[in-house]
Length: 165
Ligand SMILES: [Zn+2]
Image (cartoon, rainbow, N blue to C red):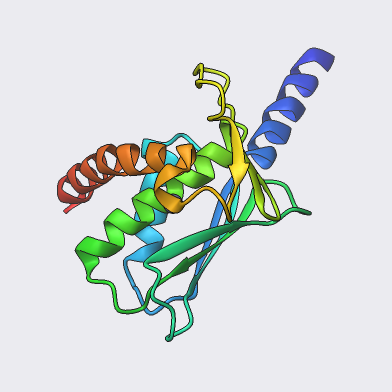
């Protein structure tokens, strides 16, 4: 009986620990559904607190993601308010790959320095860290990785959205 209580307690505890909480404060109505599908069904991110907001109107970026350095598993995703639904899906796929890199693949950004050394890969020397200032966007290994993977994530996303309708 005691073991049964213990088991039930552990089950509740494990459910409470892993949860995906998404808050969509953007103009994009689809952003919530897209985020939920990518996190839960595509990238297997089981613990996440994500607030999605619009980028400032003056911004030329498509999107960005910022990690909360104090609270674990917490992020703010910023999205351009002018994106079409198609561009929104691709941009969110890209930003979510960064969340996956932060959560499971050791991406860290300390001010100007980025460090990325995923355990399951063997990067070449010089690829594991760099300066944001001196390594152009196109040369950042984690950006190249995100550009490759966003396409795969986006394809899976589209398939799931179509099958849900
Ligand atoms: Zn990126």
